[in-house]
Image 1: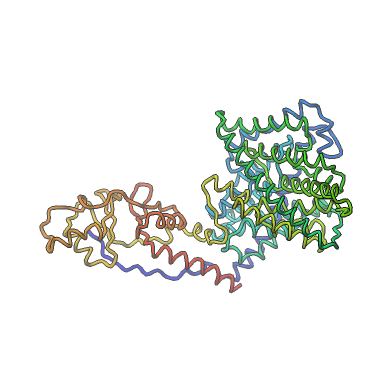
Image 2: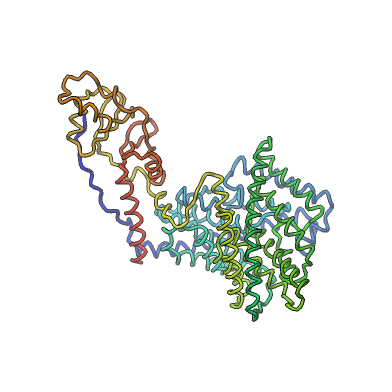
Length: 590
């Protein structure tokens, strides 16, 4: 029996909760996320220091501890850490592999902000083991993922509206960065410039609240001590802007080389015919071999950065550390370890700045360039090049010095670096990682809106259909009577068997004026290759399917291939516009 056609009228989408009430509730929730992320950052840092003091001999800092340790420990400890981490990552937490930031971006843009609960603990455990064993990775990227995971888990545990999930994830990530650097502005800008798409921009104040809360707690945990020995920045000679411009160009080239080297190592390790859990151990063994000659590459690299900022890093050692750190971090990330690239980028920038200022002083001693200042600007320029987030880079260094005089040199260097990378490479290190996974994130598009809309919310459950045994005469009547002459065809058990459209019937309608008594049935004419979507899909996947195939509608099927409804391409795009406009109206009403 053919169902009666009913024109489906879709009602405007209204917020489920009063926007002002929702705003206040989420503001309070942002404080809780800031507290949770700060505690997560504190636990991660405590765990890292615990492993470092357990595995290495005592020393003034980590670099001294490595220098005081036996050669076999330097060689084999990174390998052991890589093997332990490889088992944990492969078996229980594949998302913990890599820097962490790309996984957060992917979670926001592809999964609507959903991050598995276990990632909070396992990311902290794996990365702290690796850094404790000397892996040449940073802790900032993992802290971002830890904070984001806490934000995602909290939002789902307390059953917040799923449209709020990306905001909570970004707030947790910002709070993690803020707690690590004691830099609330940096945390906020990091979330906005790197993580978020347009749809969450109306909730910047919530991210700021989480970031400030985490920063305040970090002062309670660690005191008001700076992360780096940042010098007072003195800038009075505007002719030096030319040198900062050159530094920006070189930083852009270094950033491209860094990203390309990581990709090269990933390709090499992908081709090694061993199980995945062994590969981080191989990377650790190669790292140990390099560290026997250049021990300064082990760990996050803050000791070398502070040497550059205090002006005691010589030119030859700066060049050696620049090259060796790039290779070491690429080995670690490429082999499948967990760890960030933010801290290694800071070290690359500091050594690059020292190299530039020392070289220029050799040829033009009358300039008397201050090495520490070029190390400081160099840190920002390489971060800007690797992340393609120049504003975050400028703000990071500004919050280290609180000197307005550094803003102009930083802007010249950082924007130049980012432009060089965009022009010659096109992608940040995070975007390159996502592209490798087949995820193309286009910043500035409302993709998170699409992810947060389920197919089951927008499909039409009242639709016309045909059976495989129906006659073409019956099909012709439906084509003539229905405003939308496109029909899913069901078999005897109600499962999707094919599609019949006006285009399929056109030849018969043109050549035959009266189809009564025509012997053919729908089964003989329908198209059997069917484009459909699962009922648990989201609107983004559906729109991509429409764009790829050019069809005008798709059936929505369940696990048994029974049709739960249909989605028309025009309706799908209208729903997208409605959801996007709802976000903008909500932003304006707050």
